[in-house]
Image (cartoon, rainbow, N blue to C red):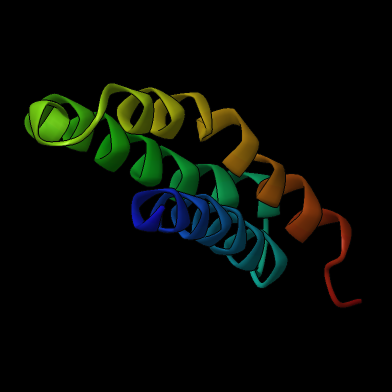
Length: 83
């Protein structure tokens, strides 16, 4: 159960990070959010590659499948930028 909570907070943290980067970017919010998302995706792929055997299969697969969901933060942050 603890591992599921950790995974949920990791996904929510990715959404929050991309939304924050897109919302407070001085210019080109989609690019700023996208760069943060690429860093998150690279770290997730590295974790799946390096630590994959230490975690259950469902955890690794869900972490990688959740990457497009985390990209929703880019849209949220760009849409609700301060004017």
